Image 1: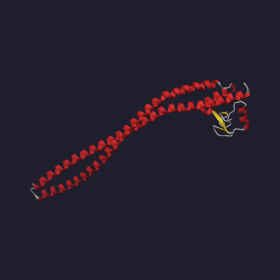
Image 2: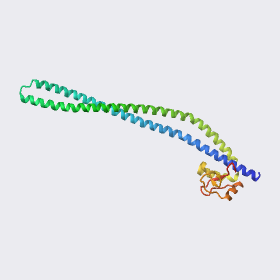
Image 3: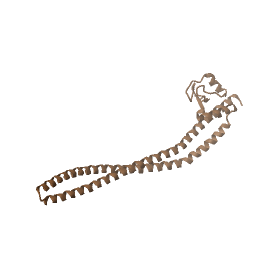
Length: 241
């Protein structure tokens, strides 16, 4: 094989290997993203369930409190009505004054209790609205989680097929790599993955953007393995070169 052919094979093989490694990395990230998304949706639904439960409990407690105060007010109003009847039947001025004072105090207490009931009913209305909103948010969260899960399950076999195809393409392409490159290529891929390769961009490393001396570029043109002095990537010539 002529020197020109060796350079062409080495350069084109490294270009293709870099492209395939990048595509494999992207595919693996997309596959990994699926379970992460599913977990995030599940955690979101769990938070919404807790919020909905808290909102329901708050509304329930307020309702119980309002009901208890209404019963209490009804009992106290009945007591006032009874004392008013006693007032009409009082047999002495002392008894009359004592009942009158007690009725006034009870009516004042009942007025305060009635105000508390009104305030409680307002808070109850707000709590019921919040509970409804929380239930609606929970329902939407569950629907979104289900849709996400269905999309993940739909995409997974397609991504797996692409992954298998690219893995085989990578294997075949690695067989085309000249012997001088194989050991260093394998070592860099084990340590850096798809970041083990980088093109020359002008006079700079396409990975870390540090300057690449002309003698190193010339070595690439002679089909020699060349590494970036800064990041250690295995360099290759760009398409236009």
